[in-house]
Image (cartoon, rainbow, N blue to C red; front, side, top):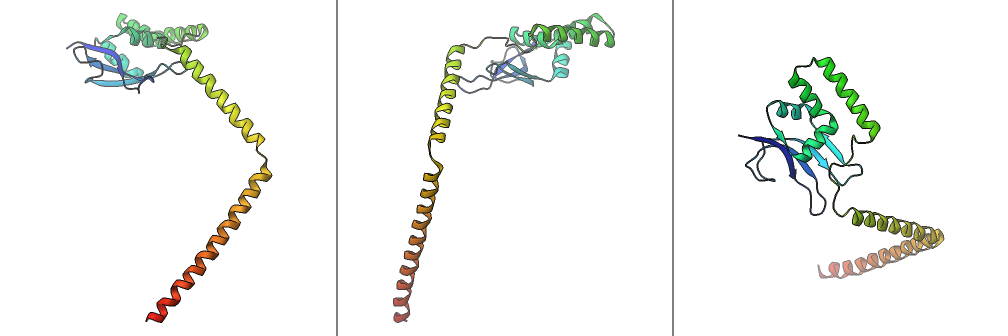
Length: 184
């Protein structure tokens, strides 16, 4: 059985979220998998990756082959370097030192959490964000334009209406009760 580390789509329509899984290479993309080891959110800015690094290293040690995107994610995290040094037989302290240096370099370059794949329709997403911001601004302006005294007057009117309705209901209840007493 050939095991691959790959992405499995679990997001809604037009809002992709991927699960990083270890799966038999013969299974369908969204089909059966062996183990779920993380999540990949490509539309967040910057893209967010949640990964169980120990399990990813376990699968790499046991010969699992990552897909191109998963390889990119693992590379940016320093896991590919860590696996390579471990296979070469380097001591644990040397591995930790080199991996931490690699992660520092990636952080300085700004590549530590960059998106592995640019989403299609990024322009449409940006336009939608701008439209939502404009709607929020309009709503704030409307809220500021509405005088508070008018709101208080409306509240007093509704209280008075409610009191009148209660009085009418009580009067009707008294009228209904009197004929019932005569019938008995």
